[in-house]
Structures are given as C-alpha cells and as structure tokens.
Length: 342
Image 1: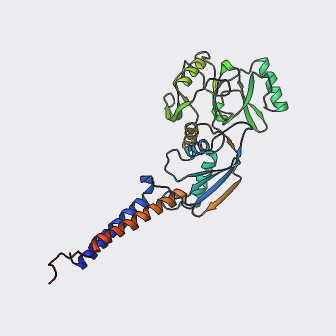
Image 2 (image 1 turned 135 degrees about the vertical axis):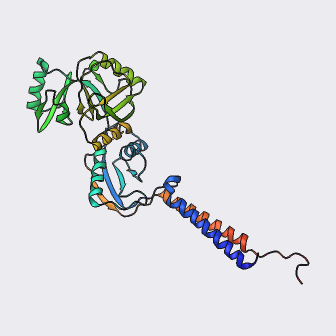
Image 3 (image 1 turned 135 degrees about the horizontal axis):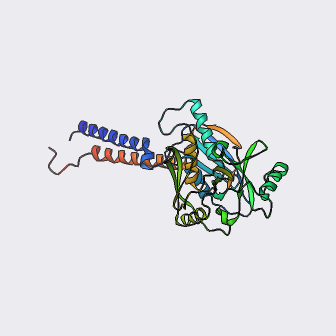
C-alpha cells in the first residue's frame, strides 16, 4: 500500500471514528451516558423538617424526580443543599428540541411548582354526619375559633380541594374556604402513621368511570392496603368515604359495596390535573416538606453535571487513542525484508 493510499484510509477511519463518537454524544440519553442541561430555571425551596424525624437525601431526590418527570424523559436535576434547601433545575427544552415560547416556559414552571406542593399523604376517612350534637358543636367551634383540631376530638374539619366535587355534601364556609367534617375514629379511617398498619399504593393510573364515561384516576393497593380497604368499606356501606390528599378532600363518593384492591377518584378535572394527581400518588410520600413557594427562582444558562464532563472526557479520550491507533497502524513505515532493496 503506497503512502497516498494509507493517508486516504487513515482519514476515512478517523472520520468514521469521529462520526461514531459524535453519534454517541448527541444520543447520550438513549445510551445512558449522561444528560445535558440546556438553558433552564433553578427553583430553590426551603425544606420544612419535623424535629427528630430522620430522612434521606436520596429519597427526597427520587420523589421529586418521579413527580416532575415520571417518564424520565427530561434532564431534571435535583440537589439537596445540606438539610435546609433543595434545588430543582428545570430545562426549558429537552435534548436538541427547539426552545419553547416564554408562555410555554411559564406554564411548565407553574406545573412544576404545583407538583411540588404537599407531602403526598393519602388517607381514607368516613364523612361525619351533620345532624348530630357533635356536628353542631364542631360547626360553632369552626366559625368561632377555626378548624384546628383539639385533643380528644373524634372528628375534624378538612379543607375541600374543589367545592364542585363535593356539592352534594354539607359544607361550611370559614375564612374564604369550604370545609367538611370528617370522622377521625380509628374504625372510620385508613391512614399511615405511628402505631398504624403499614400499607401503600401499588400504582395510580388514568381510568374511565363506567357509569359516567368520564376520565377519573384509578388506584391499586398492595396486599395490606387491599385488606384494610376491604374492612373499611364493608363496615360502612351507604356512607360517604372521603379521599384525602395532604389534608384536602378530593372527593367523597358513597360506598355501595365492599372494595378491596382497586378504587377510583372521581371529579371533573382537567387532563393536567389528572396527570398531576397520578404523578403525586405514584411518586409516594416526600420524607420532608417544602415551603409552598420557592425561596429563589433564577435563570441558568448552562449547567453541566459531573457525569456530563466525565462522559465527554471519556469519549474524547477514546477518540484520541482510537485515532492514534489508526494513524499508527496505517502510516507506520513498512519493514524492509532482506534482499528487498536493490
């Protein structure tokens, strides 16, 4: 092979290697190499921690990622800064997609903030009847002193998430909000907490209400949850069951029969509200709370993670070594054999 041919082969080999490395880099998310954070917004939240309650950084990061990006398709970055704050970096565009409009960016950020509200604590409790002496006393106390519970209470006031979802129940207005009286007796409740049986949701998913042919949120319990839910519903037939998320009542349908493994959360919600509810339920409970609004919101131009730097360095190193090997193999001088020279 003469020298000119070797140069052509070396150049072609180098181009192929460069093209392969560039292909790996621009498709690094698909190959799991790293995620590149394009221009975006950094939201910094103050952490609200209960004194004496331990929690894990990884658990908090996982729940936030699962809420904000349940499909894992966006380059969301979550950093816990000591025990006092957490940063959530939201890219304006994923990968090489075109930058969205300012209106789309504002809507996306509003959705992220909504997803980060509340711990994600789900409870099921029986609605208290309003035609009792206890209910009359509780109504007077709500109007005079507010909804705060007191020791020894067997019922308490819960805020209504959306009034139109509970229009068939007797609600009481206080401080510009609607409230509904809920029993907190152990036999009327299914909740997680100290000294209580442990249960959890297996999953939440989009479903269609067969009676109204409207979209609802379906949920499925684990084995322990199914057993407890079966006990609760079987002993309260024809009574309203409040479905409560973060101390707000989402809906309160009447129990018509024993229910165990599966259930639905009804309500005329938008597609975005359904998606948010499913994401929050599937993500699980946050180990600590976050302040309702971010303490700091700032634009970021480019935020490259250490994994990105490492992957870029490794790809560059492979490229340099590979190109050197090609050049050496192709351009090294041929060894002369005895008798080959004239």
